[in-house]
Image (cartoon, rainbow, N blue to C red; front, side, top):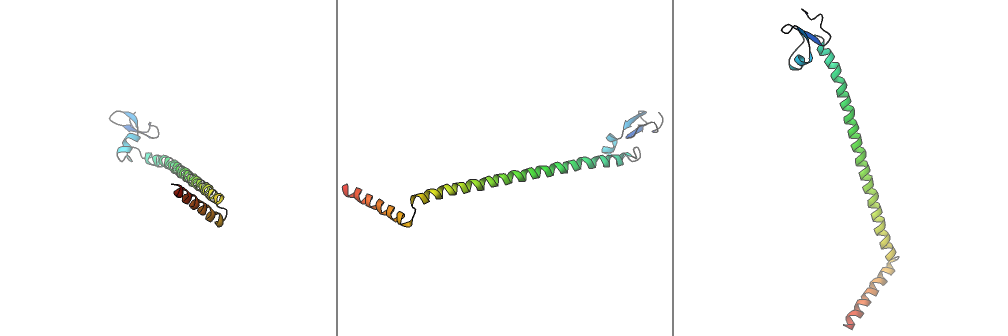
Length: 119
């Protein structure tokens, strides 16, 4: 092997070792357009694909987080409404009319007065 014509694609002829070596190690560190003229076009096409996949996974994660947040907020609203319904129902059952409330207060006052008279 005396020149790079025998080397495969993505390889260059290293005159010091007399072997075909991969372009990646030298192209990652320095400009390799002289030794590997086709390598830069190959690497740009391969690097576009993973970044597109990363964007897709990022979007998927964001959507999943939004769904989780929506579920938590909805659950909190439902539980709050149920809590309010229970507390309001108890209050409404105690005093069906304002007169019932007034009567209950009067009965309590009468009971307290009777207790204080006996002591």
